[in-house]
Length: 61
Image (cartoon, rainbow, N blue to C red; front, side, top):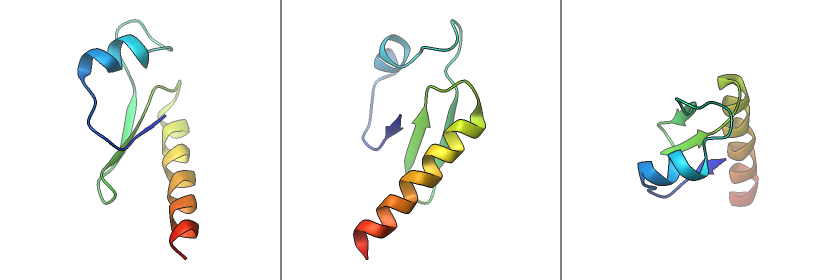
């Protein structure tokens, strides 16, 4: 899931913590100021950010 707006930590723990009991994995794109959260592997989150960026570039063009 890509987060583009501020979200509370409580919402992250209750609504976006499906893979682990004690942690939430995330990957961020500092340039675009977005975060991908809630996946089994960090590489899945990185791919989600990459795919979202491609969609954003196409929408602007």
